Amino acid sequence: MFDVEPIIADHKDVIHDVVFDYYGRRMATCSSDQTVKIWDEDEQGRWTVTSSWKAHSGSIWRVSWANPEFGQVIATCSFDRTASVWEEVMGDKVSTTSAPTRRWVRRTTLVDSRTSVTDVEFAPKYLGLLLATASADGIIRIYEAPDIMNLSQWPVQHEIANKLSLSCLSWNTSTYMVTQLLAAGSDESATPTGKVFLFAYSENARKCVKIETVNDITDPVTDVAFAPNAGRTFHMLAVASKDLYIVNIRGVTDSTGNAKLELQTLKFSEHNCPVWRVCWNMLATMLISTGDDGCVRIWRMNYTRQWKCAAVLKAEGSGPTYEPNPTTPTLATTASATAKFYKKGTIGNQVPWH
Image (cartoon, rainbow, N blue to C red; front, side):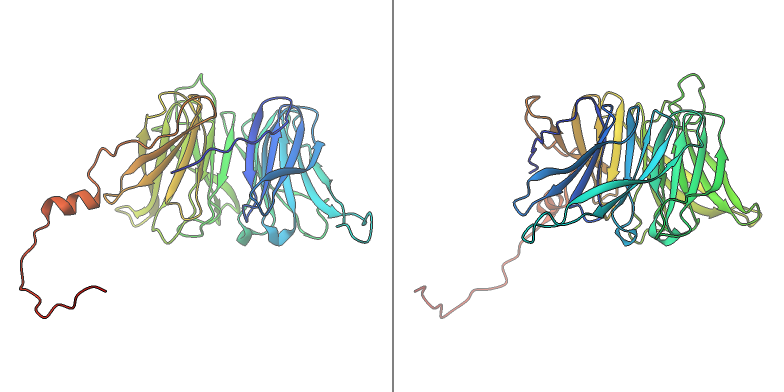
């Protein structure tokens, strides 16, 4: 059973993103009120704001945590056409008995975009301190910090142009099959073409290039998220659009011996409304989606390797939380329907209970 715990965020406008850090003990939120808030969890499980500041001069769309190996670092992107990198630093002690004060310092502002920067995400740790941004002008920019001790320098390593405006992106954390695999989605509604694109680094071209388009998804896309790879021989990409999608990405060899990607798109319409956000748990055994219906849906794969909605969480005051009845028989019910019992004998000289 899942419990819903409301948190008074104290943002003055719409909250666009909520992201946990690597360990799940810190949380960052950003809003149209142009502020970012950092939350810390205490020993009793309560979340409190430990830092809050105005980060941009426009609505802040997304926030991303860097791997803790690089320190307490976050990145934000905004309607003001910029992305910023922030680092938490320790201040002086107010007294000998108190802990040092902490504050967040802007290390750099990335101003290459001519339009709204719609998403920002740090790359997996094995790639180093890389940062990718997506913009409404259809360009993905990948920045790198050559010196992790000096976060004021972020030269552009790659620029990937796309014909459609981009609304979201996601790094693949696995090195299997394709290196530096990146997915991006478009919220363009005027063009009836594929809205999810896959990019990867090409050794021949010495740059990141588009390698595939998911043509099965033609509605505007609001979020994409690669699943962590826990030993699978394929990749999974969750897509939030008019419906929820899971794209399975496999590597195959064609008749000429060339390697290519094979895509399988699964569609789920239980939200009955646009889906806004998707995210995975650490082992990719659970997928969480949110939609315009004000519900959070939790999806699990059953024993027949089919994804089913396992629970629906509703916000406070909008109705109870419930778990849907399974549409397929579970392993327990199947076993009880076919089990038979045989008498093998009796036990003599029984010892009475004391």
